[in-house]
Image (cartoon, rainbow, N blue to C red; front, top):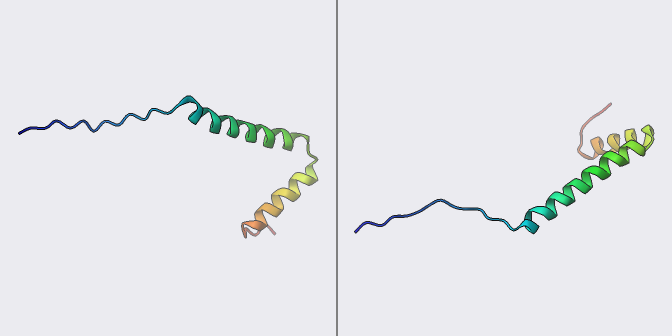
Amino acid sequence: MTQQTNNSAVNAYALSDVLAPAVLALSLGAFLVLGTGFANSDTIHNAAHDTRHSFAFPCH
């Protein structure tokens, strides 16, 4: 008795399953880039500095 097994898996995602995370990532990226572009440099420095400290990364 012979049996043929097809192990090829097809990943078919619905458009909404792919589109929602892509739009969310694009929106977050645009917010970060534009928010950084319009913020003053002290605000950006302090945010980066506080982020480094929150990860226990010594910076000075």
